[in-house]
Length: 131
Ligand SMILES: [Mg+2]
Image 1: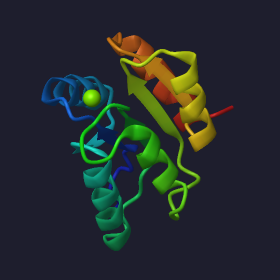
Image 2: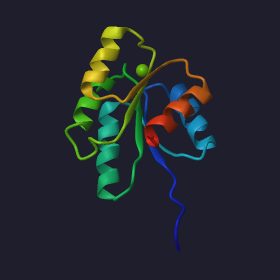
Image 3: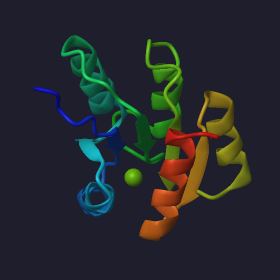
């Protein structure tokens, strides 16, 4: 049997409301979504994906989170074999200095909350299937 390959996205945010609205939007558009509650949880999810040989197309992460913030999380991902995965930031932070930190850590894109579903999906498409 040949399973249909869905694009798999890791969605990281400490807010349950954001996780459910983000996941709802992405699942509605046909993506498979795994949720994580902060950077530390997300690193654990990545580790178990690796152990279970699961494919992953994209990470979407918040910045302000307990345990491990988004900038630290991005830097840590860049030290793993997931380093070539695109990482999109979805944050209330829109300050140029913070965005610059994200860029320096290796983020591929940045969206400021609150997000419009079509804006999120456009950004996801752009980084998941680059020209
Ligand atoms: Mg947050």
